[in-house]
Structures are given as structure tokens and as C-alpha cells.
Image 1 (cartoon, rainbow, N blue to C red):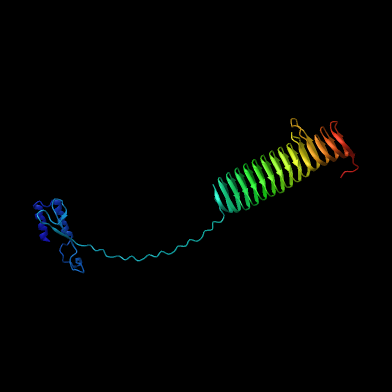
Image 2 (image 1 turned 60 degrees about the vertical axis):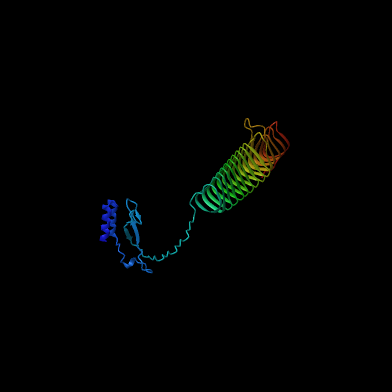
Length: 371
């Protein structure tokens, strides 16, 4: 090793190595053992050393076999052996996540939902594109501004439809408003129903309050507390109501049982009309009752500017009758007053009969009793 150091210094003095190159070589001799005496560096099969030899050249040429004068410095770099590290296999146990039962659905459904299952939705269902719910649904509010359909029974606090809604099963709701279109194939039960659009009920309709400025048609029986219609109401089945106010059109194919009827619109009743009190303000169009009218009292009048419409009826049975512009086959009552425009085939009265000059009565009969 001493000879090697001397050799490096001689090459530095001769200018064959720079100062930096000489220092690097001297440091390398301190760090490594260049003598091939250690058996650990010999090949096990051949016994030959596996250390690598390099010649360091001059003027920064790096390692080479020899310098320009055929002289070179052999630097032996021993082989570095990295022992093999055995890493044992790591066993990761299976993690089982139990099923989570969400229970009641508390989120709002927005947008479109194709084939959504029914269930309980604590908040609301909002449909602004297209949705189809299969099975029964119970929720706080249903809002439809797109196209929504429900196959099962629906129970809700509020239903608002400005788009199109279709319901196959029974619907029970506290408040329902329709400014679009709604088709119900079964029964509708509502505390309050307001319609400015169109509603068709295939089954029965049971409502405490019904307000119509659009159009409603019911195929089954209708039972309502208060009915007001400035639009059109068509009842195919029987109509039972406490109070009815008509400024539009009321058309009943069957019988109508109304405790109090106040009409300033048009009545078209094909069956029988039963009522306690009937007050009709004649419109420009005719109103008619094809069946009998039975009431405690009935009155027709014409406010100024209301046109020339008339009331036509088959028969009228009442205690108190006060009519104008009415045509009937038979009128039977305790007290009767017939004003202008009345045309009656037969009048049967018990207490009093007053007929104005421009009213026509073909036959008058005084009753001995009245029941």
C-alpha cells in the first residue's frame, strides 16, 4: 500500500495527476483494502478474486486501462455482498362488514328516478323530470313539476302537482293542489283539494273541501263537505255534498244530494236533485235537472245582466217555491209563486198559489193535505 501512495505522489509531481485527483486516490486507499488476501472476496468456485481493477488516467480522462505512457494505477474495488433478507408472508384476516339497516328514508328525492321502490320517506319527494315509484309510499310532501307515477298506495301530508301525476292505488292526503294534470285510478281522500288544472278520479272522491277553477271529473261516488266551482265539475257517480257553490259548470250523471245549493253558473243534472235549500241565479245558458227536484225551498232569480237562460225540470217537490223563467211538467208545494217566464203543465198547492200575468199554468189543483 505504501508503494501505491508513493506512485500516486510521483504521478502528481510529474503532472500526470491533478491535486484533486491525487487526493481522491489517497482517500480511496484509506477506505478500501486493495490487497487481495481476504478470502471473502474470492470466487467460491474458482478461488479467483472478484475485485474489479480500473486504471486511472490523466487530465480528467477518468478510469482507463492505462495512461498515455503505458503506465496506470490499478484500483481494486471489492464486491459488496448484500445478504438475503427473508420477509415472512403477512396474513391479513378477512374483515366482514355487517349489513346496515337504514330503515325509514329521510332524504329528499330530486330529479328523475326510474323504478324506485316504495317506502317511508320522512321528508319529501321532489320530481322535476321523470320518476316511477313501485309499491306503497308514505311521505310528508310530494311535489311533481315533471312526470311522476305511483303504482301503490300513497299517504302524504301534502301533494303539489304542476306537471303530470299518475296514481294507481288509493291516495290519502291532507292537502292537495293541482295546477297541472293528475290521474287517479282508485280512491282519493283529501281534507283540502284545490284544482286549477285537470284531475280525473277513477274511484271515489272523499274531500272535506273541494275548490275548482280548472276541471275535475270523478267516476265513482263523490262525498264532499264544501264544494266551490268556478271551473267545471263532472260527477259520473253519485254526488253527496253539504254546501255547493257553482259559478262555472256542475254536471252530474247520477243523482245529487246537496244540503245547500247556490248556483250562479250552469247545472246539468241527469238524475235526481235532493236538497234542503236551492238558490239559482239564472245565467245566459240553460240549466236542467232531468230527474225530480226535491227540496225544502227553491228559488230562481235573475240578477241584472245575467242573460236569458232558463231552468228546466221534470218535477219539483218542495214546501216553498219562488220561481221565474222555469219550465216544469209538475210543481207540488205548500206555497207557490210563479213569476215571469214560467211555463208549468200542472201545479198542486196546499196553502197558497200566486201566478203572475206573464206566467203560464195549464192546470191548478188545491190539495186537501200535504205530506
